[in-house]
Length: 306
Image (cartoon, rainbow, N blue to C red; front, side):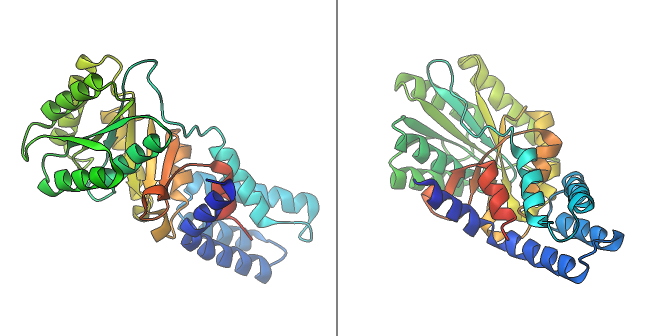
């Protein structure tokens, strides 16, 4: 896919966040071109409202202030300064999926209910298959009968095979079978759709730890990748989820979905700044190819385009 097309996707996906931010920034700068303390405070509030987080917002305002002091209002481009700071914060981001040195790479997809884990698992499988790798899906959300059906349907639609157990089966046992199946077929990737669980429920977190232990016993080093799926529309609440999940099962990366439905798209920056976890993919819509590898430069540009 040409990168221009990808930038357009980022732009469309972040349109709500961008239009609100751009509107506020323009309003503040036009009203007080002298950028006094009150204007800077308002600017900071606007950035925090887009869920960029207190640290990043303060960092941007600080950079704007420095830029204003050195070159005055005439040469000041608040958007360019903000773009630059956001890109700097995200620059270390590596969005490629980890690849096991040999054999099957196991990717565990975790998160609370309703973030889009099942869809993400299917879209990632589709993605690696379009890159000529082989993939297998595992329906380890045995709590919700609908989740098993949903994963099977996605699998049929995208021509990816799904391994599923019975509804109510032990999730770890299904995961075990799925790893065995992936190894037998020499699949390049196995994507495990785990049950949605509240980050505050200790017993469910222990169950997830058990599932990972079982996989690791069977295939040393697995799961190689543990991706937490976050719903962008929940804004900074997602940060608490990320903190708690990361304590229970060490995460290797984040997938942020529903960016196209929120004006709080800045939370991607806030979460990465606090946890130092790479955002690997972002969901920019409903279609199979709307899950895109994260690109810091394009994200910063789409967020702060004038």
